[in-house]
Length: 536
Image 1 (cartoon, one colour):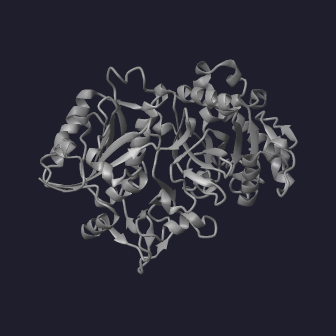
Image 2: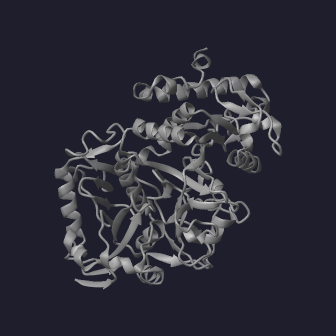
Image 3: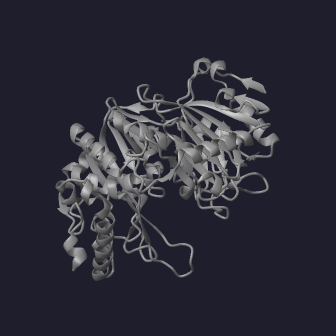
């Protein structure tokens, strides 16, 4: 086996069973990975210097194909209602078969860090078949100083072989695609998919498992900090504006997707960003758009014209087009990936039902309620003539990556909010003036103005009303914002239709939260929307 590059010779890949590989490329940097990816026809160069790859059949995560090994250590720790078990025996066979599959192949290895807090970091070795996957994960995780690679000791190893095909009967999985996590031994196996996001989310899942017992809250959120050290956390599912709204040129970006909140404050899990690019424009998101024109950025499933120019409006491959770039490509990004305890928590939702106000202040109990609910709504876009929105409840704003029971994360969050006296706001970036198909998206200018007021503390001084449906406090008037949109009912042409839609949404919240009733105390249960409205 030929080994190239810089690594710790005491922990080469032979030590993890990959000694039969033909060649190993350790910790190759951007230029070399470009050359390998293009030479192997894995990816192409864009007109602007980015690297563009197509993932084929899988253009997003394969959530139904993700498994956690159920053993003596994990049995009573994992939320099995949300996570699929795999036996240690099946994992062992899968592991052996994937190592055999790697024999004779050329593999790429990156030694990286998950977590910018030295007390809570997860040194991670990522082994990939594809050169562009190696660049992707190098962009996304934290890159140790070159001088430290000779002493690198991984605690998590990810082996990602897209050409491997799992056998459900033999490996205890569902299809030929598999993502199997063995937390006890610190191994993740990914096979049968070229979607690069699986690697990043595997690290997040591992940290979500490891950190809560240490009193550290893992969060699917973006985060930034103002000049005065006033940190803010933004929770939100895909499409709610999490990445966009946290990329504020007046504030320093800590990170766009995954963070921890520990004893010393918040810290980024990552060293890069994985931003959606569908309908990306220089006008709306200049910082993110600029990264797509840089050497080192990886574009995923973006359509290029014959001159190699990206068409960010083309969704023919998928709506989930992405770009992956190191954090320092954002001009105002944090150099440390750390900040103090947050002053403000923003929970983002894109309410396609047109019911929720553009902003509302939450009590700590309401914050826990909405955190556990993790509500947003998707628009119907597949069938002709279907305009009814679809509610999505992803607990903790990241259910697919939550190995433990949501109440464990919710209680941690509530305790931290109370301990550090954090202001919590619910921000709706969805529809106003009616539901999707009738109303229109919340004006981004209004959202930014309300967000600015929440972050600088001015919005706390505003006169508020109590929303009759959800019980949270809504500002009555805010300078620079059309007063009408602060009261969503008044934006509908028919108020009775609004009332009917609100009643429907309240009922959805209550139905969804039933599974948490026995896991929270009476103060959180009391923070529920107005059940009387739903029952009328």
